[in-house]
Image 1 (tube, one colour):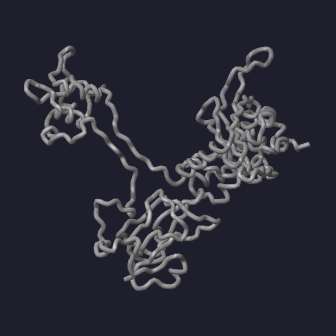
Image 2 (cartoon, helix red, strand yellow):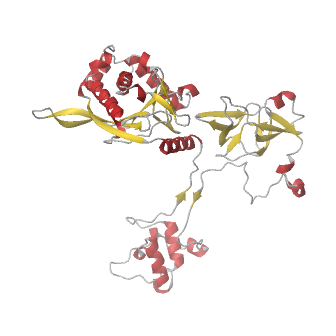
Image 3 (tube, one colour):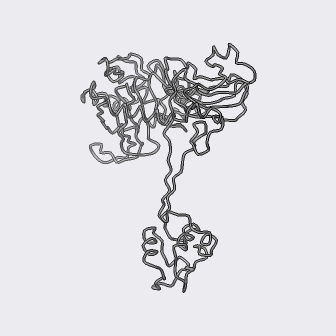
Length: 445
């Protein structure tokens, strides 16, 4: 028998390290060649690491959430025979025994049987739940087995004072327990600490509220940690300015309804393809907002191509798939590509190039309501356009109030490179295009 050391392979694109997001095996598991051992994440791509050989898992080198350098040992397998040259050249190496620095010399004989009291990096670590009890101790068996549960307790008549010591009364008050609902097992029906323990474990009387003391610890790993890191980077580096404007989308909604009615078997148009078309037209007049700012080098990269990122909620968290070259797409083409990339992001099939490279982003919380929002810019972009809910509101037309379908645009800009005048001019252009949708289909003059 021999040990095969499996190292984290070079995932490509200049990646130097990856985060371990999942173990699919544990020490002692039998695995076959090509079985998945672990999943690691780099940027927004999750990569599965397969087993190169049949064998038994002997050691796992990291815990979920840790970052591992490319080429660092990831796991060890016990395999039959000797490791062949092909396995070693692929990033694994054979070892008759673990490296000396990973094994105490005086404990070499016992290294295969670690103490159960010590935390093992090989084990899966589920989200831990931390519970605290007011009592601080487990109630005695007599109390757990006794009849003093809420279901068997009869509420005392109004005004009758339960028999209990001052310490029991203080504890019940701090725990939010009505002693009239607790059946006492002490002399003359006196309520004891054991009665409170049993009442707490057995439940509470109908209609009573109870303080909750459970705390759940959730490790922020994988995509959620990537989102946290990018949001922190954006807020730390970018000087945000948010501009909110009200837009009358009555005419746009009428047009959208007619187009959907005429093509009842095709893709249903949402407001987003119209907004993408409006973005393309608006950045022609304000090209600074369609740019990426390298703040370390002090260079603003102004793009002629309009690659629109679409903030999309997925089961794993927020992702930003990209509608590329929106400037070369018509309305239906925008809608189809938008549906394709957002669907791929949600089901996990999106490729790396479909999740990177945006030059300006749209975020929409319209279906959830809200008058306005303060969207965070997708670094290193310099602008993001937020869509709020369409609502029927009274609108003054100069002679009287008329019902109109109104929507707010909440847009944030990087104030280091975008002045307030440019931001306002850009949003006002969007407003004009959306309020007069025929302009979206006119050729630029």
